[in-house]
Image 1 (cartoon, rainbow over the protein chains, first blue to last red):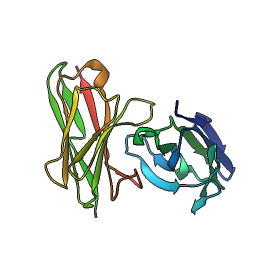
Image 2: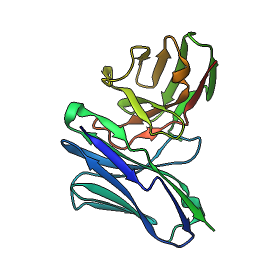
Image 3: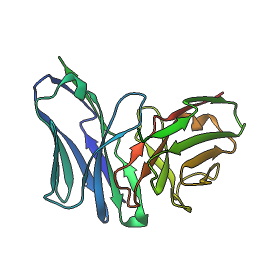
Image 4: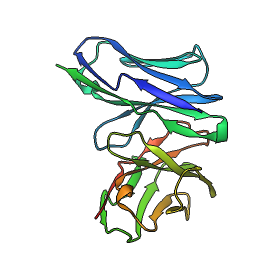
Length: 110
Length: 113
């Protein structure tokens, strides 16, 4: 059965304290892995798409990487405005399905 | 600015009373999606349209229906809302199928009394 797991569920960082969020997946065939950011009471906002192992994408303080089993979202020197829930999602071959992980709630303390 | 608009932002309905949620887009995207997101949970895809081609997720209850009369508009109909259907309903669009970069609306929060 296809599965997507994000860890940790919640993360508190001091401003400037770099860290990584994990998205591990067990799927029959990965067509794409996506990272989104969601602020409270709002719809998710697209960050990155990754298609193949070894691929990396960067945007400001965020960098996403992909292996055959997991993806990491690295946050370098975070700021309070980076506080949000970060969701990963996968598009899989089986039934052409698409689903989100449960997310990591990030809080960056000034 | 091009965007995804959802109306209303908040909807209250009674148990069993049909309700329709609306989504419109100015992005001229081919694909429109409907998601259900319950508190502290991940968004769950209900169905999507690629142009006029309707794609229902296997576990979406029959109580949920959708219409897409034209490129710009998509509706979510809940025929007989139950208490368990209270959630945020998110509409999203993407230029092409394959669940590529999706643009989300702000959502409609549905309360069922």
